[in-house]
Image 1 (tube, rainbow, N blue to C red):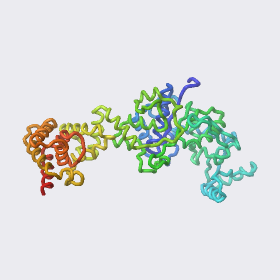
Image 2 (tube, helix red, strand yellow; image 1 turned 120 degrees about the vertical axis):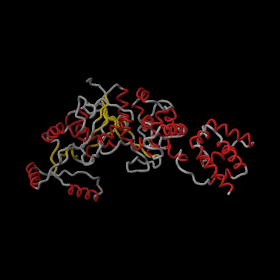
Image 3 (cartoon, one colour; image 1 turned 45 degrees about the vertical axis):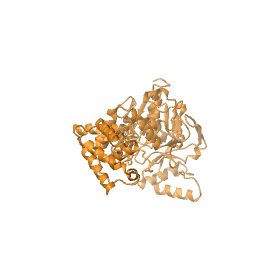
Image 4 (cartoon, rainbow, N blue to C red; image 1 turned 60 degrees about the horizontal axis):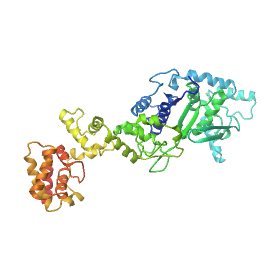
Length: 496
């Protein structure tokens, strides 16, 4: 591999489903790799076994593929730098941890959780930032060994802590944030690199994996900034060259102005939720990419190949990115309008079935009827699940006309129009939108009533709505029998 080869990775934990923020990290790394003709790698960080969920890995990979991402190496496709699950790399970590122990750069720590908590409470009382206090402070080697032997005699298992250098500056030129530096005395003291069960912690394993997999650049969320000095210390301890880091801006909620929190259930934040609602993957890819990155010019809608060609990491913003659900709906509507009818039909049909509005195994006539219905609402839908609410008149028996709709038809001409229209559609041999349109024109000629006073009574009586898609097409889908029933019910209400 050439020294300057581009190799980037997305490293999810199988502790949950694919979050918008993590999807953004994956997309930025993917585009950086593809634009620079480099390699995009998937690595599963699954050492936190207590928090891993069933199907967590499958869900991550499946939703990345749904967004249109592919990768060159990973747990499902293999590669020369595997294994690609941290749980399978323990034989790589163990000797390196031992090396740090042998060199005095790490040590066994026997402080219990209760002791650590007591330390934190005491620090809080002294108005100090929580930090680990070196448990062997002031001891010579014999005293230190005696303390370790006493802990082992109690059956305690140690964690391994990294010995943090004193009063040393760790700095890097961040690809997004510019120059960032930390004094080693401010990071909270010696940190754990291996848990009591021998499993490495994130900050140790990620360094080893990135080095062993020859990762050249690391793009990740702003919440990882505080981890970077710890990781730079480990790179330094082994004499390894660190990759270039870029920490992407926070994503904040448009409504609250606060960081997007997974606990905030007022905002859908997981890719799977948008898939379930019938969003288009191309629109989601486009929307997520604009959370902290901007193309040159005013246009915001491009396809994936165009994004790969134009991607420029220098256009990553250091300012917080605003998650705007309304903009996502607008953007997805644009994609829906441009999508081919078969794609929209497939996704919307699944929504009709899921809502119980059509059978799970619809017959040919139902499929054709559904196709007409979906085409009727295609340009209005921001996402496919909306078909059920938008077209509710076709599935639910409407109640009496009320409110503005009732006021609209509470006049002398509305009953005249409705009676004439009912008489005409009863005589039709073929009940379709073309014939219905001609019927409305005939009613106009018969009654002399036109414009709003002609169309609105028919729409309100048949659909009980004042607005909607093309009226003749809507009446065709309601069906002759139901349309007549609704008209007679409305007439009875008006004349009662």
